[in-house]
Amino acid sequence: ETGVTQTPRHLVMGMTNKKSLKCEQHLGHNAMYWYKQSAKKPLELMFVYSLEERVENNSVPSRFSPECPNSSHLFLHLHTLQPEDSALYLCASSQDINQPQHFGDGTRLSIL
Amino acid sequence: AQSVTQPDIHITVSEGASLELRCNYSYGATPYLFWYVQSPGQGLQLLLKYFSGDTLVQGIKGFEAEFKRSQSSFNLRKPSVHWSDAAEYFCAVAWGGSYIPTFGRGTSLIVHP
Image 1 (cartoon, each protein chain N blue to C red):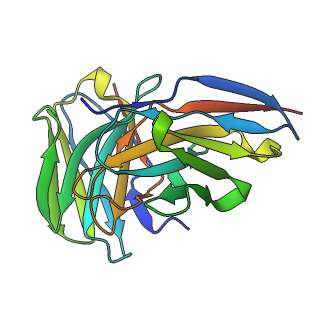
Image 2 (image 1 turned 180 degrees about the vertical axis):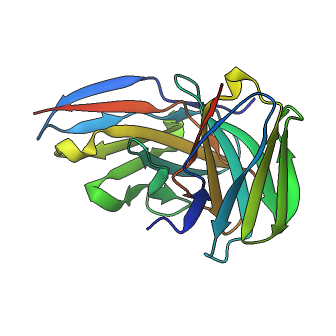
């Protein structure tokens, strides 16, 4: 049991599609994160929210748009993606910014 | 810039052998230290953490890690590896209370029968 649920688990989309990734946690955590994990590359931090406010944005292209409507939910809206965006997208949450993170199992995204 | 280094990309051990995975970090404020494990098709799972106190910390699945401030290291150890330990291992460091943890590149552990 992970405590952090990501949907969908797999997503195949064309470069012109618009889709959204969803992350949900019911651990009472205050911070939520999006990471990109590509083969043979380090884990890339994309966005961080603390108390529903964005606190970190690591130069992520604007074709990725996060949304945090409440402390339990985090979305990643995707549009006009590129083939190099194919990766595993991981969501995580933690009690506070510097505390251990709980990860979801990820969404495997493939861009055609 | 603050950084986390896991010098070994792959480690191969025989089942039953001991294991040590290395993690070094750049010097900074009192670090918060973490080790995570990722099995194929899954997210990362916390193995153990160090915030303060005893520099030898015990974690889940029989793992332990030792914080050595003088060497800026936080190496992960296990006395006897099981085939199910084959996975990717990530070290993470947060420098001080307001910092988001930085992850190392990961070490892939291969276990031979």
